[in-house]
Amino acid sequence: MTGDPTNLERRNLPVLASQSVLSQVAWTMGSPSIVMPFLAVSLELPMFLAGALVSVRQAGGMLSDMFLAVPISARQQKKRAIAVTEIAIGACLLLAVIVAAVGGSVMVAAAFVLAFFLIGLIEEIQSLMFTDLWGDHLGSKARMWMRYLQLGAGGLGAIGLTLVLHELTRSNPPFSRHSTVVAVAVAFFVLSGISILAMAEVAGKQPKVQSGRKAAGQFLVEARGMFEYQWFRSYLTMRLPLVVVSLAVPFFALIAAEAHHSSTKGLTALIVSSAAGYLVAAPLWQIVNMKSHRAVMVSGTLMVAATGAVLVSVHYLGLDHDVHLHAIALFVATVATTGVSSARKLYFMDVAPKKQRVKASAAIKSISRIVAIVVSAGLAAVAHMQEVSLAVGFIVLVSLGAAITCFRLVRSPDTHGASAS
Image (cartoon, one colour):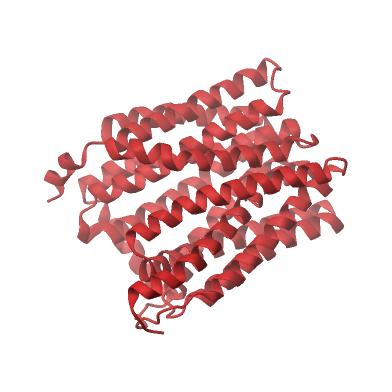
């Protein structure tokens, strides 16, 4: 379809805005980082499995990134493919819940692993398609407005729905309460997928793409070549500790699930705190990012370290019986990791030379995924054999190290601009 870009944007903006809000509600209420691990712990699955679900999801994303994402995201028409991915993610969550209701422990564990692997596989493809779709059909201001609307309205919607469900199901058994939340998330994934079909999509030229095996081979060669550049080595040194910092949310949720999985308020409190965290993070970090990316990364990593230290301390003192304590910790971790994530992406755009940006981004993403898989699996093993608090303690120590690394390595754009040119 062709037409005036302004009219096209005016027509598509309400459709994409509605879709993004529906999707945000779905991702918040069916969060693979919070809700599903909480459900796994409540089903008394091994702690190693609950923690290792992060690794499984990252593995799916890495395979998708290397072999499937580029050729699939190069499709001319993306809205139907995006609709399918939204519904497919909902189906993965529904599969896990249905098997949990009727299957034995081994079957439930297998269903959770399969669901998380497929979610990781699908969401990476979807992310690339959304980037192209928004870039092709929305201007810069519209994209920024959409992002804030998505976090704001989607977060408020998730909070409201979660509180309503809490009141309606508070007398139900734990699994019934938790599965109801996931079922509502599935419904919103379906609604999100259906709603995007209403947009008017402009068909672009079909780009030439390499086969998965050939593209993967070239990717490895290009990634190895990036290590010749000093800016890349410096950025990677700063980036890798932040991978561990990003694990704060799932492992803070895990220690909360361990303490409150049978509580009537446990999951509700975590979903509300997580949604509120996204709500606060967007305007807060936007202001700080305008002045200093380093300030955001250092303060975010220190927030994670301080919050994790408090969690570990109250755990060993036996004072972690109040679910609100864990909710506050998850809120702070969500705000902090959201800020760190946005700042490092903006900082990358500042320091990466334009000609090397795409190759460097792909290399850093894949290396970071490998580190996330290995570290999260190791922390899951520690949580299973010892205590989740020890895994959280490790995240605290690395977060402190990450704060120091960011303070020393992150410089102003002007300083890097001179060295990169």
